[in-house]
Length: 214
Image 1 (cartoon, rainbow, N blue to C red):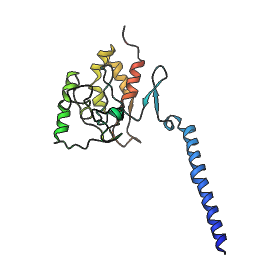
Image 2: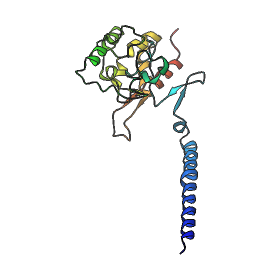
Image 3: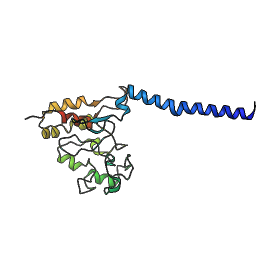
Image 4: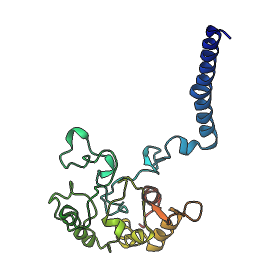
């Protein structure tokens, strides 16, 4: 078999594999995702009552108002900071990632004690004095950041600790808030992995849609 024929065969095989793996397969997976899992394939985006996109069910975001449930603290403020105006340095670890501070690290202890930054608009949420002032019994996930700092969930314990504050701020009966928590709690993955978690953004959007007491 001539060298030219071998080269020609190699080129044809390369082109066929390129068409299969770089064109046909990607477009098939895109089409499959859009047809079978359109919500997930498009970013699991959530909208408010006006139909405006307010975030993703997969990525957490900060909430400051007493009307809303607090998310987990985030070392990157859920990547909402402007890289050009990052005075608080929340993006030092990148768009996601933990602080990697040891439990004995003074910086971690200062944050938890509310001494990291005197400006409440800059300080990372989750310090003990602020939680106690809001009448919230601190739980581990309301104090410590997650590994990604983009966690959209809090534990059931953390959600229940905030019921009184949110119900009072919204003028809702506590049982209505409890029902909303139950409706937006994701169970264990495949029923066995992990622990149930409350999706904070979904829960807060549901509360916005509720009719408050007159």
